[in-house]
Length: 397
Image (cartoon, rainbow, N blue to C red):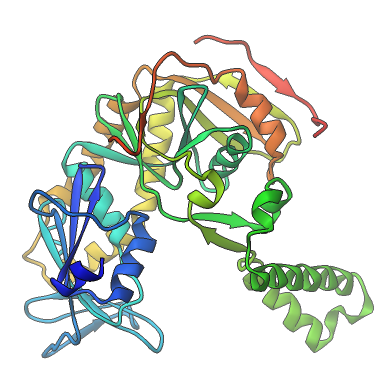
């Protein structure tokens, strides 16, 4: 990698579907992009689809601001602005998204803003749909798990990891329009403190600092609950602690690479054969039933549009800055995404799982296990319905 940096470029290949090239990156820039997308540098044998050029400084004239430290524009460029002491300007050509585009960043940038949405949209222009999902292979079956945030996608992945599943991806899964292949974007997995109760072999690998932070926050949380039921609840320290707890609870997680959980059981692609749509509910029961994959496609289309909202907000700001410019691909992206997703999921054996949250890993595994049989093989990373409704009440685990 150091040799490539000396040559002033570093490449990434996303499953042969999309190429990214960094030009003049520092080692910190390469590490930052690697953390965002999860891929290791390689060498492209074709022209890249996305170029990210780094420079010490982006000199601009007549910079006009949109919001406070959010975006800005000049006569010839639109900029996403960073926050904090190491704030940096990033020039993004929104009129080029969906075709070959070049992003220009100041080198001190901590991460590339909107990189994953841009990657997903570029894949969409090539006929591949990125779905908010997790995926793994179990008993030679390609399993795709999707749903809204906190629906249990990552928990299903962990539950099957405990039973020998092979990792394909978490967070974003790339589907071919014909539904024959799925690929993962192997970015780091977010692990919450309560997950560790089901992953004892991972708990011991966490940094002592992280374990101490988790313990301290949980102790403060218990103290806050005790105070809220006492006469001290109206005191200034109690009010301060109560106000701070939501932000502190959001720190009860770490991100770890997939290899920390799955070891060598990491795959490049598989055929999606079983589709699970997970929804958490207030009941303590677990419920499974067959569902039409077209219904899942309709629901997840809403999820895709929701995930695109931050990106589209910047695109609206871009159109405000340059009223004469439009990106015809972005203007029609919803219909294209809907068609591709419907096509990709058509005919896949699909099930809906309702479960409580937080979810019991063993109970979720037991509920899904009966549907996870397969006939097809998968491709390792080194190479490139009708069933009865089931209910489980208050499972003992």
